[in-house]
Every structure is written in structure tokens, then in C-alpha cells.
Length: 371
Image 1: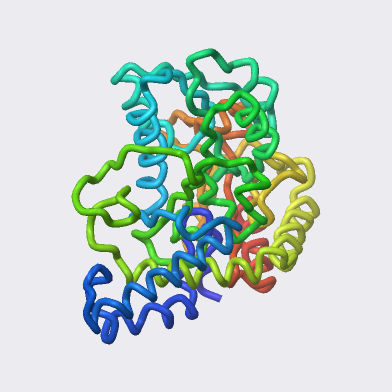
Image 2: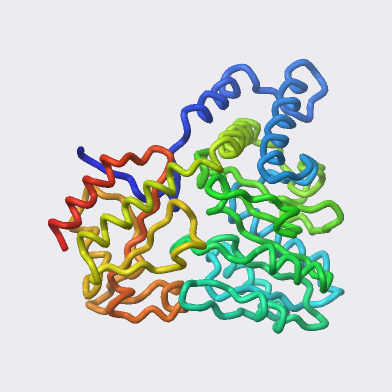
């Protein structure tokens, strides 16, 4: 076995079924979906079908799905768009300290324009307290944005509880669910979400496509102005090719989201790691409220980056970086209060649809050789 890919949280391979769904758009469906003639109307129908596939995964209306170029654009549309449209009502936004840069950077930008940002702490598992969210609410709070699950440690946030709090106070609530879709059930009404972000390349769709769920009645200012594409919220001729890929990926995710195979394989991996390394390996994140594919572990008194460099055929991510002999923990592990001698040895293994037990066994052999 030459190479093993355990970095599915970073990006997933394109599913064969998704590639097949996209192929006709390279040859047959080339018309503009806005055109009324024979070449455009079939593409419009395919685009509508893809939108419905995404909506089915979220249990929402197709008219509430806005196609974007990816998760980052969806987050920007949600945060900037809502702020620009609703700024007269208030300028206060609540988030957590462990959000993805695609949330943190737009908020920093809004801060320069007058927004007031409150960042709540997380506990040792990377979990946000709903009580802390409620305590942070002010009269001028207009938006709460908390990720559904953490991309590094996999901890799943109490989104439904936070959503209830937002709803009670009549505050818009956004969640970035990029890492969660296809791994755990995500239904917008159960989460009490007003806006929700999807990133295609996290669930076996192509890169360069995503979507924003926007609850009916929630108003945002478009980031891209022009013609009335995407219900007037994103100008530009729709990328029907990539939208078809995302639609098919969401259909596949709906079929597999309750399958325990991935969780069983991840648990097998963690059991074998504990057997092999005992107290020298520690789990980062919540033991139970965690994505079924994500295993962030620390090898005590080792540097995760060095460990991965010593296993060139393994693709995984580290939770620390080493610069000029000094180890810097990731912001997430730092906010969780993970000690440096533990955090510096962090590696995130994220499994996926094509991971096999044989691959896990091979990784265990490599790790034993190096550790």
C-alpha cells in the first residue's frame, strides 16, 4: 500500500456518481439557463433539480437555497449581507473564538465598518455554552453565528439550543455546517437556523461550488450586483455544471448520513491507537459529541508536524506548526486550553467514504514505527 488519504475534512475526492452527473453539462447542456429557447430551458430544469436535491438534504424549500462559489462565499454573503441590510437595527454580532477563518475574517472586516463583535469562550472540549451566548446578547444584537461542528477536533456544537435562544430574542442565527453535512443529520428547522453554509468539496462534490440556506423572510444585501440570478441575491450566469455536482452529492449524502460504517471505523482506529500507545496518546475534542469521521489526537511530547513528515505516504493534518524551533498551537487547541506539550503533538485524522480498515491498519504500522 503506497499512500493513504486521511484528510477528508480538508477536502474530499469527487464521487464517481457526482462526476457522472456532471458529464452531460460538458457536452449537451451548454445553454444559458436564463434563455427561453430549446438550449436554455433544459439547463434551467436541471438547475432547479439540483437546487431541490440540496433542499431535500436540509429539509427546506428549494427557493431557500442560494448557490455560491463555495463555503467562504456563503459565509461572506450571510455575515456581510445580513449586516449591510440590517445595520439600522443594530451593529452587535456574537460568535465563538474557534470559528473558521471564513467567519473570522469577514467579521474583522465588518468590525472596521463599525460592527461590534463578541467572541464567547469554549470549554476544554471545544464546546460553546448556550448560556454564554444568551448572556452576551444585547439590545443591539442582530446576528449570532456559531459553526455546527469544529473542523479541527470535530466537536458538534449545541446548535439547536443556541438557535432556540436566538429565536426567543428575535435575533438572526447563522451556522457554518460545511464539515457536518453528509456526516450527521442537518435539518434547518430542527436547528432553528436562519442561515446555513454548505461547501461542496467537503461532501464529495467539486471545489468551487457551495450554497447558503436563507430562510424565507431573512433579508441580505447581495455581495455581487448585476442581473437577477439566484433570486436576485447573486448576479452572474449560474454554474450549472458544478450545481449539478453539488445536487448529486447532497442526494448521496442523504442516503448515507445514517450509516454507522464510518463511525465504526473511526472508533476502531481510536481503540487501536490506545492499545498501541496507551497514555502517550490523548483525544482532543469531545469523546461523544463529535463528527463520526474525525479523530484529533495528540502524541505526547512529539511534534505532530515532524511525525507526519516522517510518514510521507500519509495525508493528514497537524494541530500545530513549528517555526524557528518554536511550536505554535492552532488557535482552536489554544482556546481549548490544551497544554503545549500535548497540543504540539496533535494530528487530525479525518476518514471518509473510501477509507478502508486495511488503510487504518497500515497507518497504525507506520505510526508504531515512528513513535
